[in-house]
Image (tube, rainbow, N blue to C red):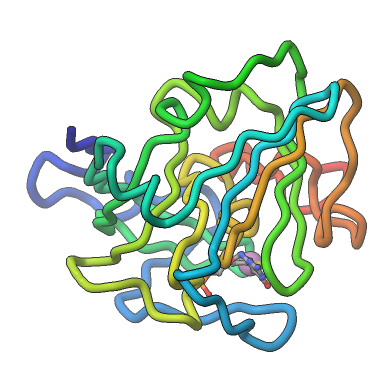
Length: 198
Ligand SMILES: Nc1nc2c(c(=O)[nH]1)N[C@H]1C(S)=C(S)[C@@H](COP(=O)(O)O)O[C@H]1N2
Ligand SMILES: [Mo]
């Protein structure tokens, strides 16, 4: 299934597609808080842990057997660049969560390399988030989070954890890396929720 966000209908005023304070870029900047970790697909695992500690894990082989989607979405970085109509390929989080038993409200996302970010669980569901391994038809490069990253395009891009390795489901919210350093806990670009208090 292909998903298309606003901006699909031909050419239009760029400003109408851009959240407040954002500018359009055509290249793809790399923003990483640390070195790029080496992630080997042969040993890659993605694990969802529910609030009572049950683990649900997928290998790369498992992931490849699941239905794949090709979302075309706009992405917005808190450092003010946006890219419109980026295309990706991967597995919807809805597909993974079909087998997960949880009543938790919050998700704490962990990456290989130690990066973390948090968001309400509902922001990962209902067609809003994917584990992606291709960008514009090519394997996702390691600096952009390859082999596999999270994509949550309706929130600022710091929520889209590169080199993602798992999600811990929690009854209480726990701030991730940037959220602990003053970024907004939710990060809606359309409400310009960049920093705490925005
Ligand atoms: N693991 C990890 N994921 C991460 C980051 C990071 O430093 N480490 N940076 C975040 C931030 S702040 C942004 S803007 C985007 C940048 O993605 P890009 O480098 O592919 O543009 O990744 C997000 N995901
Ligand atoms: Mo960012």
